[in-house]
Length: 60
Image (cartoon, rainbow, N blue to C red; front, side):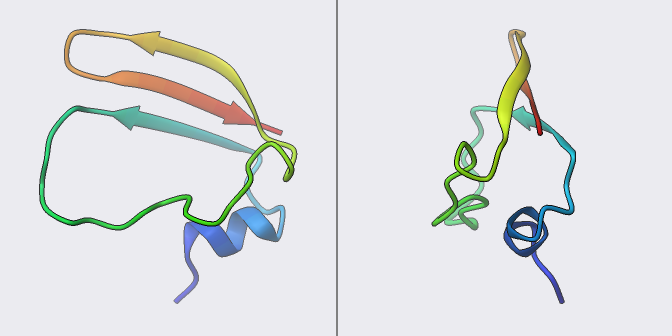
């Protein structure tokens, strides 16, 4: 099964919308460990903070 990291490295993701909420659910998985998103061509095109989450849009 392919991971988000593999798709990003292959250039198959044009845009990512991340909703980041301050909730601790356990050890979890590091979504972008070992990736340099800037080097892969991604930049933050939008970010919106709300009381329960921060929404970030990354695009190529």
